[in-house]
Every structure is written in structure tokens, then in C-alpha cells.
Picture (cartoon, rainbow, N blue to C red):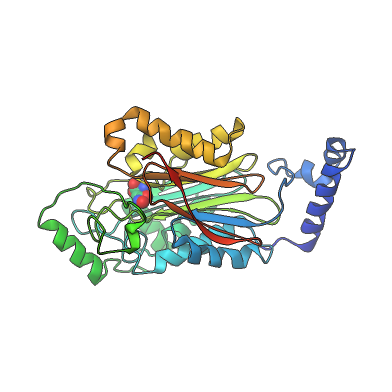
Amino acid sequence: MLNYPKSFLIMSSRRKFLQSSVLGSAAIVTDKNVLTTPALVPPVFDQPIVVSTWDFGKTANAEAWKILSANGRALDAVEAGVKVPEADPTNQTIGLGGLPDRDGHVTLDACIMDEFYNCGSVMALEHIVHAISVARLVMEKTPHIVLAGDGALQFALANGFKKENLLTPASEKAWKEWLKTSKYEPMMNIENKLFDKEHDPMPGGPGNHDTIGMLAMDARGNLSGACTTSGMAFKMHGRVGDSPIIGAGLYVDNEIGAATSSGVGEEVIRIVGSHLVVELMRRGYTPEKACKEAVERIVKRGPEKSEKIQVGFVALNKKGQFGAYALQKGFTISVKSAKEEKIYAAKSIY
Ligand code: SD4
């Protein structure tokens, strides 16, 4: 874990002081640290915060918070955070225990992005629990951004990851149940019935939208994000959703903010959703308004279809403000900062 040295943090408060002083930007220009690290913008908000998709983001946030509150880097925080649901066999759409594709293979999609536009991604990766860590390694140890399928697996194994069977008995049972009809019809969780299995329209099935997207800002005011999923349950073998696609399932621009998504990935890819949200924030939209506009674009493209599916976006800007919006009711986000630890229900179109 890369911890920021104390001098960094002193510098950060000094910068804050300079920003609020009458000298303002003139003083910042003479700040050596800014000049030597041009990709970094002076922190507008130097309080750590982490936001993630869904209620279970709360436990993932708690792990990320250990790093953020110890002056760690946002990149380390988001990786550590999303590893929690990846390792949880009861969460059936991420990592271990994820629901398989229609042929019974658990295939994982994940991506990660830091404050320097560095990014890494794995698509349709099998047998490795922590897809996010493989994505980070793609970012840090290869000249590429994306590795897919068998190539991603070989890369992971060559780097010491353990080959495991990700199909738990519960997920295998759900798949065998699904095989009886073999109907692929992604459905959404309304009114947060996600944890009320009795009312779930398709228990253990595509009704469960549980992908974790996590965005964090560290004590230095730098942003990073991570997104990891087993994708839509019972998808075609080889299908890749939005989650590992930089710009669709996740985007981070350290000058502006970050965004991530959950829901039917095909619709998010079509509008390059997370990038769109960040660009709207660049134009001055609040995080919630930017997420709403992205969701409205999905509706505009196909009003009838959008009534039947779920897509939700969550965004965090450079001021530490966050917001979310979804197509349907039921989309929640988890937030952790020094000020609060809360789960918010996102507003929705329908
Ligand atoms: C996908 N976006 O594979 C993912 C699935 C998801 O909530 O987010 N479900 O399309």
C-alpha cells in the first residue's frame, strides 16, 4: 500500500490555504509540487470519501475507508474495497459465487482507473476470484489496457493468482433451475427487493443487479475508481458488459470527477455512460443531474425497453459531492466519509 507521506498532507493544507488567500492562483503556480506533477490538480476538497453501488457497498466501503483514513491512495482503497464482495460467495453477481453464463461458466469482468488516466481491465476472466487485482496488474505491468478470456487467465496465473472453481453449489443450483426455461430476460429489482428473496421476480436470476462500482477521493484530493462483476446471469458465453469497459462502466478524470454504473450493460455501452456523466459534470452539472441526464438518454433511445430494465449511475465530483440516478426504483448507493456512513436510495425515472 502506498501511503502519502506527511509532507504531502501538509503541502495539501498549505495549498488549501493559498487557494483561499488573496494571492490565489498566482501562489499555486509557484508551488513546486504542482509543477512537477502536472496531472494532479490542487485539491478542492481534501477530505477522503468513498461511494459505491448498492447496499452491500457499505462493507466494501469500510475496507476502503481503512486505507483512506490512514492517508492511503484512492487507488489502493478502491481495489481493497471491491475485493470484499468479490470474495463473498453469497453475493451472486461478483467474483466467487457469481451466477454463471448459460453454459455454466462463471466469467468475470472488471476494471480500475487512477488519477493519471492509467487504467486496466479484464474481460470474461474465469477461475480467478479477484478480477480487480488482475485488472490492476494489467494496468501496471503490461503495455496494454485490456486482457480478455484465456489470455487474461494465463496472465493471472503467471503472476501468482490461484486457479479456483468460482461456481458455488448455490449458483450451480440457480443455473440448473434456469436451464428448465432457458429464458434470458434481465429483470430489475424494484423497491430494493434485492434482499427480499421471497419477492424477487426471479430469485437468483437476472433480477439481481449487484455489480459493485466504487469511487474514492483520498486525503490528497485524488480520485480513483473500480468496477467488478460476474455480469448478467445466464448471458451468452463470451458476452462482455459495460463493467470492464473504460468509459462505459467506469470513468475517472482527476480534474472533474468519476462515475460508475450498474444494470443492463448493453444500454450503458451504447451511451458510453460513465464518460458521459463525467463530461456533463465538466459542463457544470451536479453529480445527480449528470447521472439523470445519462439515464434520460437511455430512455430517449428506447422508452419501451427502458421501462423493463434497470440502469443506475453514481458519480463523485472534485468537491467531494456525490449523486446517483436510476431508471427504476431500488437503486441504492453506499457512502462513507469522516462525516457520514449512509445508504441512499437513488431517484429514478419510473
Ligand atoms: C453487466 N452491468 O454485465 C453489468 C451487470 C450489472 O447490476 O451491473 N448488474 O451488464
